[in-house]
Length: 100
Image 1 (cartoon, one colour):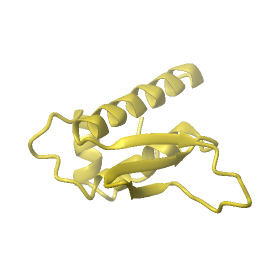
Image 2 (cartoon, one colour; image 1 turned 120 degrees about the vertical axis):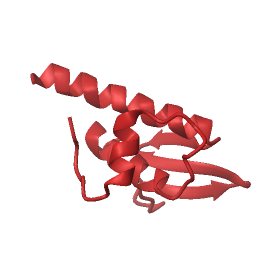
Image 3 (tube, helix red, strand yellow; image 1 turned 90 degrees about the vertical axis):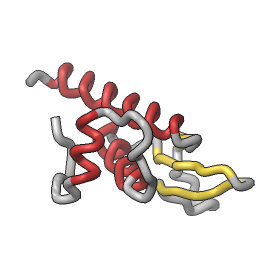
């Protein structure tokens, strides 16, 4: 697979994850978390009672995907459509890293 195809697949998978999060009413915020005055890292939090996934925009897309996948593992996805690759990754935690 060429580098361009790999990038395209990674972006497509990130969109699948965003769609899944929307179905769960979870907002995903991509931000540069490099501010030394406000230490922050990618992860899950609640802001004013709303679910939020904060993702460091400086991370490569495959790592952003892993952050979101690891957080989605906490939620019940049985009653919503989830792309088959997401369901496979969530049901098989031994699959780590970017899976083209």
